[in-house]
Image (cartoon, rainbow, N blue to C red; front, side, top):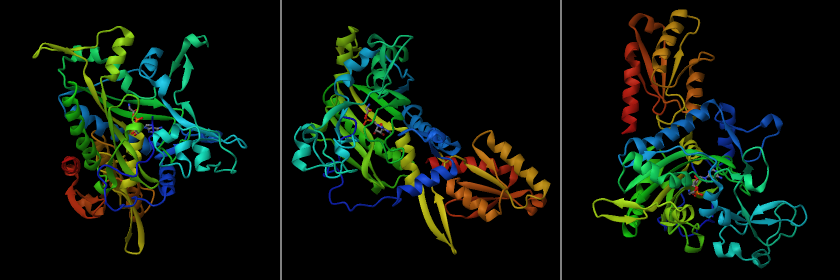
Length: 477
Ligand code: GAP
């Protein structure tokens, strides 16, 4: 199942007090996103389309940076993982073999009066139901559940398949049905042999992919938390069967949690939660989610799954292709098991945005500051003139900015007084502001102001880029 119900007994959270969310009210983030150009509702001039969101000028930078940070950790910094970019449309048999046509569904109930449809485990009073309860035909009656909109009677749950269907080619008949992929993982499985042979990787090795996935979610919502079109960052790690796979699974858990911490997420707002046996997806032997304390509760940020030989075994049987791996050291042939780390690019970007949000009192003013890690911040530097009426100051600003732009996102702004310009950059997470003033024309030095400490340092203009690059390097650790 795509979204298991909340488990009241998280793996590592026993007796730990709830840290509370970084931001009490989700609307704070929604309105900042809209106002400053991070995220807009899709097709808004036509009234919007439910559960699709568009990334504005700052949002696309943030999300690209999140994807880059993931790729860096999962591919660039490792020797045992390679990348792939498979198609969104795949042979329809892939989704029959993978089990998605048969079992990729959520429990849907419908109001007999207003005909609104709900995902059963999203209804008040049903959030903590077990997977077995969610399949129970009598559950609505047993719990006395009613439509939250008009109190109307609800139908027994039925399984609703989440895959979007479309037709390939110029005919709209059953034979031409294809699906928009609901996960990127299958692209890695069907390419396993090609990737392994062309890269000459030896097991254990991984295939990493970032790309769009689509799910016809019954109850999308909570802004970009659950969408119908979204992006995943998934890695499939091919390992020897049995205990070796179980050990690899345990190793990936802290590694993936550490990635969120490395990019600034407050550790107490992260936890692990293991799936109960009746909650496991059809492919999983074991599954543990990394959860984050969102303003709307603890929710899945990323899933880590021991998928056993389900995927390569099923695709080998169904396609007739031999997907065994030959280990030259032991001269054994075997179907590798798969340990998967499945993250969402949108959900990760959303998390970084929420967790970076701070409001503080500076003198008599409220300062809103996004303490984004410099690698994630949309702009690394803003170059600001103290006096925009002095052409020499403006000209020096543009020269500094042009030089910075060869290596990073930098922006020039002169549309307000300096205090206001700083606040605007704080609010979008720009780690450093470079200010050019009258003295700069005399001594060739400019001021670099730090977003978090608000301290200022005077440096020669020609050193600005070096100083910023050094600070970025230092932040990377
Ligand atoms: N290949 C396994 C898989 O897809 P999943 O737990 O269903 O596992 C992995 O999805 C991750 O993809 C989730 O942890 C979440 O970050 C992201 N994701 C899934 N459905 C999503 C949705 N409707 N909107 C946004 N992100 C989603």
